[in-house]
Image (tube, rainbow, N blue to C red; front, top):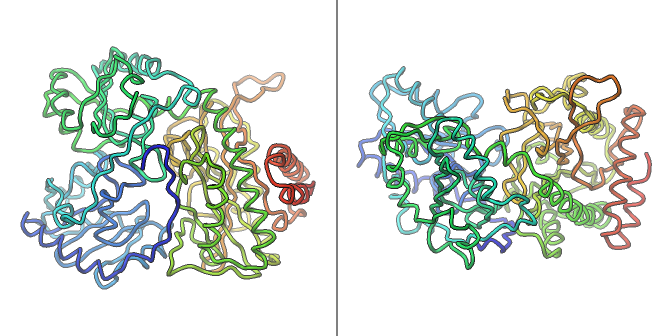
Length: 609
């Protein structure tokens, strides 16, 4: 796709499991030629993307599994697919169980499997697909077990895939205007160059597509769901840079936009250009880049410095223009989402659509807006027991029809030139039960606690995570995913380094960071609940006598929360006041943007509790 063409979700029949036998057999034939007993297949591609071009869907090709996180290891006599709890149903539906064992990442890891292999086993990997930090973990496991890890190129999956493998994407790269980006690329480069100097680095090798997009104020269309250009860059300590992209991707006016301080060359030229830094230090991110690039720096005679991608924190801390743009995008998206929620609350209660029909209806509403560039991820539309699977992906085979007496969970988002949205709403179909209302309200109380907290400078998302879980914990419940992830501005819907989670995170929440607020509850084989808004970090007013700088969250997402699921008796007066204020703001911001029938409904559902 070009950078201004929308991709909307399609619902194919699940990949035929019978392909697993054929594809694994073809891979094993290539493995034997290379003297391999096993081969590691990560989900990530050469750019460590979450969402991949079709040509890089190697895990999906060999296993049938199309989730956005996973891995496999193929031995000559067995094959194992690793996925986490988000993809329990999907991983089992999409794989041939006569070929693949399906294991949970949290129970058994790739490193555990390597460590459990027989001494002398030769396991191959593609260094272009594995980060240095991940490879170091695997190497440690291999050494302890007497297993041999072998880097191989070309990738044997690519050889087995053969001429049927799709071509690499060649979407045009276009400027992201200053009216949306807020800061010129030259100013960003100069700022980052000062950091390189202080680290005694002559340059940084940047391979993350989102960093390329942010640093050069460009967007692409190589990756579905995220407007990313695939390529690499070398940022030098004097603020100049070299951008390595396919010539076919250069749009009219792009070179002029980049300016004379940025030279452009093809991706095949990166390794040769690194030789200019022989005897000097080159920064590389060991988590976002690949082991291939670490070795390329060494081969060029330069000394690699493992450090964060210099774009990481500046990209996460949105400037005033980006915040204003994403606020505007969320209000427009809130009007579209409210129109959809009106449909669920009225027509859908009678027609009882399927999960696919629900997702298609929401996309149809968004498509009519005209300024949607893409979805920000495949819509999660889960009814009843499927709602209890946090990252459920509906297929033609798994599609359920809604029915009275249970809950519908819809997690969706869209890409606009001025912002990226991500919102989850849980809605009652028919009359909710007392259990539905109780559990929904416990989740809502945690959502409110996180939305309203003030916290001092230096606080991380790890410190705040308990706020969203406290009411569930008090009753003996929990959820097994993080509470919040970072979000970009017309970039990835999942963006680091900040997050709100039980897992340790070293990055303090700073002004301008966007995070989701999405506690949930999932009753296996019955129903699921999640309430998600996006919010950003801003300075908080310090009361008289206060001694420390404080921060708070400001809400971005504006769409009604199903009041039929709220047990008002479980809310404190302060929580009721918050909900009344939130809904009043929804009506104020969204009401003027929706049709009259939706506005009348909105006035009812946004009335004080």
